[in-house]
Length: 202
Image (cartoon, rainbow, N blue to C red; front, side, top):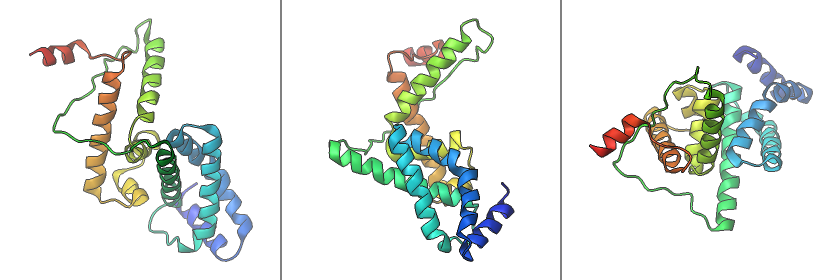
């Protein structure tokens, strides 16, 4: 669905045609659910988050002014709902979502072995490691990486979705990637490449 088509449907809903909202739900329900699932990590909770996102979107659609795509506006609602949920769950479990920053920079290097006989198994292992790592990221980092790496939003779209300045978006994505790398590298099933080991030994 193009931006113009979205805006036209939004105008119809804003003018009182509530049935038009169904087409927005059908167009975006899969992405909203997948974003929710990656954020909260549980299918039942993800369904609740997705439903809450559309309910809130419908109730708040009068405030949508078309400054960004409807999908970006919807992602903002979904992300905020998921973050609120995660913070609530964190408080219940007494687990802090804060993180410690340092000046250490480390890049994750993954060799291109697409044509290796074991490539599919290795890719599956990598995907599993990344999924595990994402679950251990602070909620804000998880949200911004999902929007960038999974949903493919531009820096500008992410800024609008999360109400952040462009510079903040870039620095937070950098720190989120670095944190994910550190988590992956600390995983016993995920190791440095030989070049990374050599640099560490020097």
